Amino acid sequence: MTEPLVNDQRKAELLSKQVRHIDIKSFDARPIIDQMEGMSFTSRDLARATRIYNQMLEDKDCSIFLVIAGSTSAGGCMDLYAELVRNNMVDGIVATGATIVDMDFFEGLGHKHYQAQEIPDDDTLRSLYIDRIYDTYIDEVALQDCDHTIFEIAESLEPRPYSSRAFIREMGKWLAKNGKKENSLVKLAYEHDVPIFCPAFTDSSAGFGLVKHQVDAMKRGGHYMTLDSIADFRELTDIKIKAGVTGLLMVGGGVPKNFIQDTVVCAEILGHEVDVHKYAVQITVADVRDGACSSSTLQEAASWGKVSTAMEQMVFAEAGSVIPLLASDAYHRGHWKTRAKRAYATMFDRAVQAPKG
Image (cartoon, rainbow, N blue to C red; front, side, top):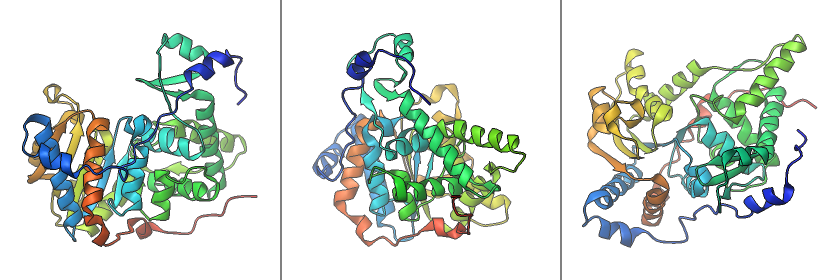
């Protein structure tokens, strides 16, 4: 899409400072976490959450799921999540479509997120085709490149139903060949056979590209690929059944949180005896008083038969300020070095039609 006529100088001023993603390898958070363990309030909660995550990594039988909602990827945690995949510190991912598409895949194409040095009125931002996430900016024209690339990937595939995991794997394959960023979560997950699920996948920039694919295919009188949300639930439940002992590292809440927790109930309905998620950590600022699913505590989830209360910890904090400490501590303690690789993505491998052309 051709960029509209805008004030290019003003737009360049606002998009002048890129977000720098934190490098958990560049600092050792162990001394900080060790001291926080002797403190109170959120500091002690974070120290206990970090200890539980290290227990997940140390438990040779435990499969770990990273669960992400919110905008921490755009805000500077993108490389952090990539390092967890690169170093075998997570075995599966459940996330929002925005986290995977608008943020990670977007940067995999070579685009950037920007710090807002000033925030004019949002009508002005709209006139400049700048999208805002709190104090972070995205170039809308660059985001449309993301839409178009999703469309091209959809056009290249056999017209049949796909789970979001299967389609995101195709996105990772595309980035492995054509991407411009080594530390893309989608690309690394493809290369390390870590499955990514987005239960509300079209609630993202991908939705525009997929709608265009469907409309164009209908105009051609042909078939089109579709997303199968039931397959998402079934595949994730299949992993839970195979995994046995599981741990959850959850950033935010929302649909991804409930989706991964519900695999326990689904497995039981299918006639399998499975354990509740043995370990669970959730970092959130959600208020529990309104009874919303996103803000339900892990203790509440225990009443549904989803999570054990023995090794769980809620951390009520802005995730971007605490998840780097947790991840750096776990990286430097090094329990990941002796973990077995699960490669759960290979459970579902099947041939797909090669790209056209």
